[in-house]
Image 1 (cartoon, rainbow, N blue to C red):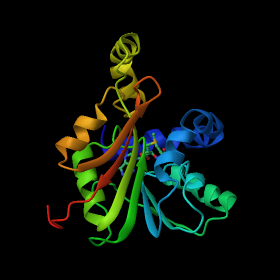
Image 2: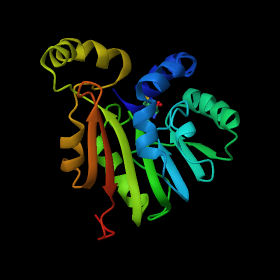
Image 3: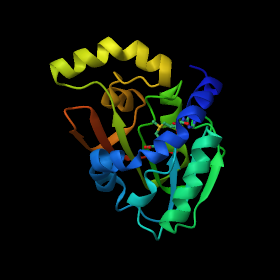
Image 4: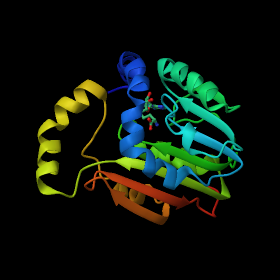
Amino acid sequence: MSVSEIKDSYAEYADCMHRLEWIDRAVLGRYRQARFGDVEGRVLDVACGTGTNFRHVPETVDLVGIDISPAMLENAAEQLTEQGIDGTLKEMDAQDLEFADDSFDAVISALSTCTFPDPIAALHEMERVCKPDGTIRLVEHGRSDIGPIATYQEWRADAHYGKTGCRWTQAPRELVSEAGLEIQDSTTGLFGTITTFEITPSQCGER
Ligand SMILES: C[S@@+](CC[C@H](N)C(=O)[O-])C[C@H]1O[C@@H](n2cnc3c(N)ncnc32)[C@H](O)[C@@H]1O
């Protein structure tokens, strides 16, 4: 799917995703909390969607959220108000971030690389805008390591992609490695469908 098709698709789902956030909290809340609960300083949430991550970052952070979908960002604005967070939201493509190098102490993102047309470019952008002594935290989903679940995912992969633009059989660990990012810590959960990462940005600065 192209970026504009993804935008259209999320315009359709935004309100529903916002309403069903309680399910996400019950299922994924602990993974988000474990990865995002200790970030500090100026924090960028890439593809923030309806702002599901916002309740999982400390309220002291200086939060910036970007997403390609204006409809998702409208819901994210409500989430900022609900959480009492003084954050900033911008419509932006994760593959071409409009921030200077080394702008953020932490870059977080959840359930996003599966939807980016070029996830490697987006991961490189996250690394570029993160300070060398900062941290990149991801909560990603992908192909299960449990046979019957993986078989179901493979069976429905094309239909799921056609509807949502989400590649739910992606392999997040391989993706992060392919991007050349240094994984400091990683966990898997939810029957092998969720992988979380703590990544140290490259000390070289330039890629
Ligand atoms: C499955 S939702 C996840 C939203 C949120 N991070 C969460 O965890 O609930 C994927 C999000 O990626 C956004 N997205 C897709 N492609 C994008 C791109 N190229 N740049 C920025 N955001 C994008 C979509 O608009 C959508 O909000």
